[in-house]
Amino acid sequence: MIKYNLVCKKCDLTFDSWFASSLEFEKLKKKKLINCHSCGSMRVEKNLMAPKLISKTIRYKNVNKDLLKYQKIKKTISKYQKFIENNFDYVGENFAYEARSIHYNEKKADKGIYGTASKRDLKELKEEGIDAQVIPWVESENN
Ligand SMILES: [Zn+2]
Image (cartoon, rainbow, N blue to C red; front, side, top):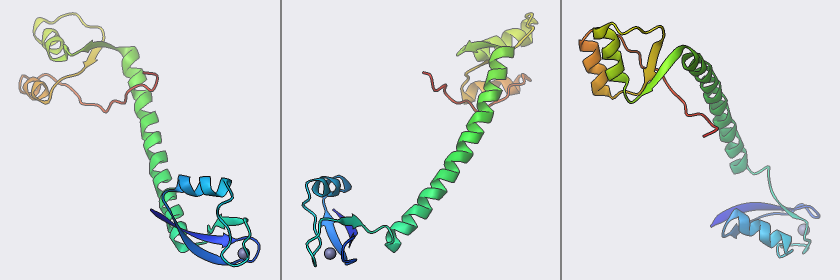
């Protein structure tokens, strides 16, 4: 159930009314089943000046700001990712193995490598003196 503060556009009466959902409100409004308690006019709208709705708007704006911040970070990570994709060889799950190959066998590697490794792999590599960096990664949106 959802409570709306409604306002009559004809006589300016405001009143509260309960609906099963916001969708039900729209449906009833379309079917002209919502009318003013005082003058019977069908020109009844949700009262957007209700304090409850204003606080909701503010909260929504804050969420938006966070979202923008997130998208900005994501953009930076994406740029970083592109650089890595262009300059490093992707070895996927074999990261720990490949890193060791380079480290111990002096395998010729013009490029660095990147891939996925477990926390345990990373800890072991670190103990063996192999330098691996953990970087944030975002999934491509095309997938
Ligand atoms: Zn009215």
